[in-house]
Length: 147
Image (cartoon, rainbow, N blue to C red; front, side):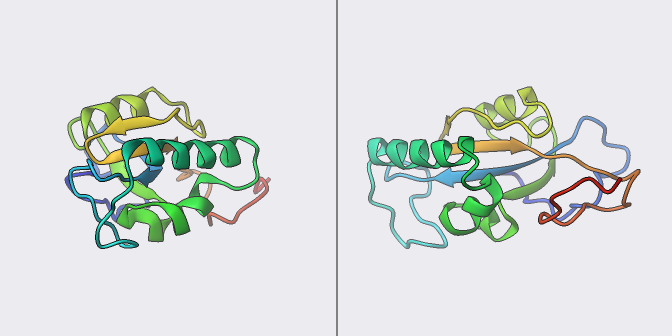
């Protein structure tokens, strides 16, 4: 997905303004550029089946039944699933254009509509950074304001 999955979850690289942080949930299909994942050695579902699957995930997230990060842990076809879909920081040119355009257009906390790339179908959530409050990212399990 990215040139690298950034392990920099603390702050964007120094001297590189314009980077954002996002998480995503990926559903691959047999026409994806790499039709395999950590869950399946060979993905055989059609694009239409992948579309139905990701639409059901989108509804669960929108209804607040589950968060994108929680769902990504078990359902995303990306290796970032183990990090709740978190891709770390990335900037212009690091991601596939469709993904990048959608991610940069989001406000912090906003979730994209379904985005199609050569990798498959994505839901993207723009993440926030709280260096002035914590010096690092709060736990993904933090449910209330620190104030």
